[in-house]
Amino acid sequence: MAELSTSRLWLMRAAFPGLALLIMFFQLLPLDTVPRRWAAPDLLIALAFAWSLRRPDYVPIISLALVMLMADLMLQRPPGLLAMLLVLGCEYLKTQTAGLREASFAGEWAAVSMVLVGITVLNRLILLIVAVQPAPLGLSLIQMVLTIAIYPAVVFVSQSLMGVRKPAPGDAGALNTRTRART
Amino acid sequence: MAKDRSQREDFTPPLRRLLIAVIALCLLGIFLVWRIDSPRVERFRTQVTDRVVPGMGWAMTPVTGMINLLRDFQSYQRLSEQNRELRSELRQMQAWKEAALQLEQENARLLDLNNVRLDPRLTFVTGVVMADSGSPFRQSVLLNVGARDGIMDGWAAMDGIGLVGRISGTGKNTARVILLTDAASAVPSLIQPSGQTALVSGDNTAAPLIDFLENPDLVRAGDRVVSSGDGGVFPAGLLIGQIATDPAGRLRVRLSADYERLEFLRVLRHHGVDSVTDPGTIVTPLNAQIPPAATQSPSGEGAGDG
Image (cartoon, rainbow over all chains, first blue to last red; front, side, top):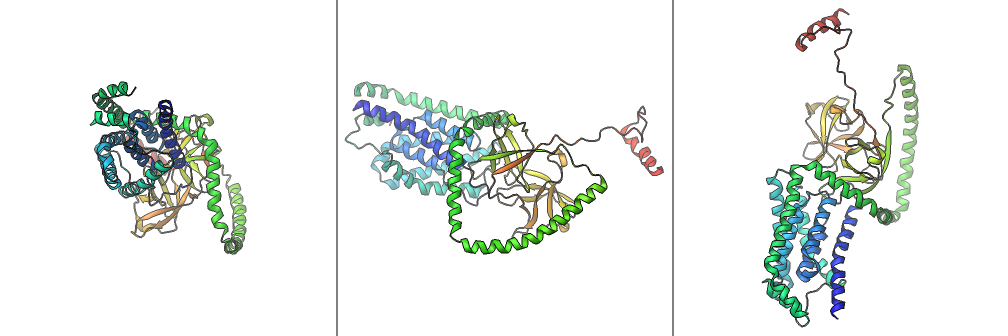
């Protein structure tokens, strides 16, 4: 049993970068070369949040940082900035898992939205401070709102298809000690 | 085992916080280095893209093809309607074809008469579009030709008809083209027939803005916009598009290149424009050491005498 869960742990740890690459792959497909008036939601961020809140051990900070840095490089963003904000946001959410475990999904959604708004604002602010021209405000707002809107869908897919769900109180011996240690 | 683990976990919080801080600082450091020494980091980015994206190519091409096929399939539903439209368009095109043929013959005759030599160095390399920027905030595409094929930064990329963008960032096997619609793109251009110069600067919409125009009154919707070659940025005379006014009254360029389907792009080899540097040996004697301000009047008089 222990061996099985360890192999599953590593499988899921490998699955996160894999999924991230898949998302980047679909974003890179040269389908739309005309500028659009709207921006698609950032699935990668939603995925990172959903997994951090459900199974923090599936997305260790190293893998999170590397994946996000890769995304920054591939998607022509200022490298490192969004990755840093996202790592900090995810780690903050991970510390909140204990409190949010009892709360309903609405509470979790609100927390995620707050973090996302914070990340967007900080990203813009830092870009303005170092005098880099940030992305158009309307587009970033649309992307932020759509990412918040699609978050429940991402949660549903990761729970039902990939089995990334919060450990039930019964089978969570190791995890309970872990969350206690963290708080 | 469980005990062992819980003991280990007890020590993690300070370590964990340290780890978070170290990683966050590393990422911040990368960002600051990018801000300070952008070219070096951008070169690194190009190398990463150069390594990763061609590896995805085997999957990218079929998936893109499939999705485009599905999109086309939707248009099959109104096949008969399209057929009718196409037939009427074809009739118009035949009239245009006649006109074009006549003009081509006339053009060839005139060129022959004038003994005009077209720039022989304006040859091109054709590349396939592999990927786009992947983000709604940046407008660029990745071509499958790179430094290996002699591509250099700053060259112009066209589709069959009009200018598409500028090479910015060449890896060994790939090159990135910043499209004219990108917010970072600005191309010195010439508006015909009034001959006004302006900058075509992208703003993340489908039609770039016309900037730094001296006299907007002379410019009308429908005027042709071509590259002016100022600053040695592009060869002169590449077609960019036509002037159009947006509802706010600003002048924009409706691009001639078909941005809906960028599949193959031509990258024009361009080795800069030779500039005239010496004052000319006939007008002023070679050995005369005249200060630059004084050269103007004698040469002007000389021209007047001649």
